[in-house]
Image 1 (tube, rainbow, N blue to C red):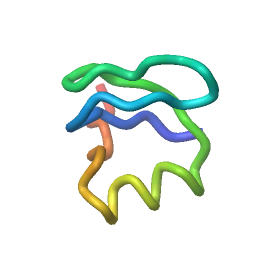
Image 2: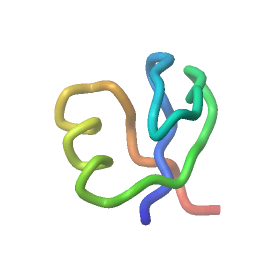
Image 3: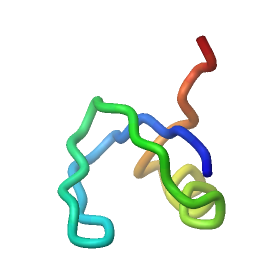
Length: 45
């Protein structure tokens, strides 16, 4: 699981993911979303 910050609003497994918020999602999905600029990797705090 990877934390990503969403650039757009989308639905994922029946949940609404809002733009600008950070969510933890599966690594394979995260890599695709980051490559297509749907999301960006969240900074570690």
